[in-house]
Image (cartoon, rainbow, N blue to C red; front, top):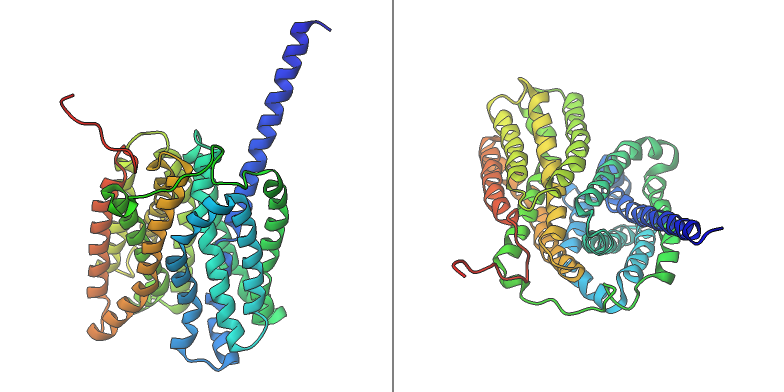
Length: 411
């Protein structure tokens, strides 16, 4: 065989190996993202059964959702530090094992186990939430938008699937068995991550060592990304909690209002995929942000003006807008950072503030509804939140990166 042919064969083999490695990397990201929502969304359909069986009040059982969100907020800034010290692969593997343990503990029996398991799984999910954008920045620097689309869409699909199947499974296995089921994907993902742990960069977050990231909390760009994340989280969880009640107050039946919430979740998956792909192709994402926020605003205005008339249209607007805003927030963690360390730190900062917003938002809007006996003022406040979302989004979408000073004009 000639030298030329041998070289060509070696090049083809290397190309095939590289492509196979990229596929494995994408699969590992997907396996983590599959586990970041089902442990939360599987609870909502079973709240009534859990409350009756455990003898809890409505206020106390609501902590099953609030506790994980509080864990997201409190622990998000810690995850990048753990990754810098122990490496992303090691920390993510441990978080998957902790997630499985937390899910099983929550289902083990007793009120103490119910809430302590919720706190453990919330802490585990917080780590995955924060570190995935940094992992994407490190392993897919030229494909940030596409890979973010893949994993954010996976988040949406798995969340919808878990919400849909939890009640049917509970009819056969009880609510404990239904919740425990979601430990299985976490165990599978942990097993699949073992090769990455053995061959990964366990000494730090990046190939070239690691360095401390400072000054983010004083960066205007970091705060714009943070506010965008926080405000879209607030709008999403308020909608997730109260949309059926808003529609019922407008004259819609209970069953149809439930289907409208499902429709909003389903169409959000579409925009979750396409928004980062479009955003990743251009240096500034201001046009994409404006389109996504405009869809949110149109949906809220429709609910204010005519909640029952053309309700499907308002829900489509709302779902598409919220799905796009969520995936854009994830994309900003990578696009606005010069390296994986900054990406993980920015993700931690933004998700810390964002999920603390989200944890208290639904309760605040519920109190406002009780005080005014109508949804007009709460919806007007939600519209004001969307206006602020647009303002912060225009800043977060500009072509700049945290830690890198903007170029001086006139030089």
